[in-house]
Length: 42
Image (cartoon, rainbow, N blue to C red; front, side):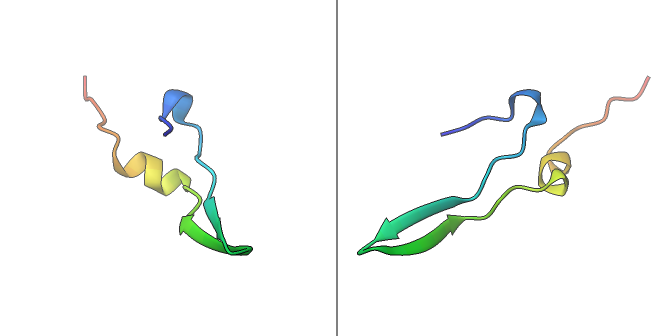
């Protein structure tokens, strides 16, 4: 489990099953972070 403290990008997550790596979550991009931000206007 991770959070967005200081808007740090989360790395990809890999699960190893029977010695075979499986990508279970892609690396986060800046676009992914900004998608959920709300910009407050003056």
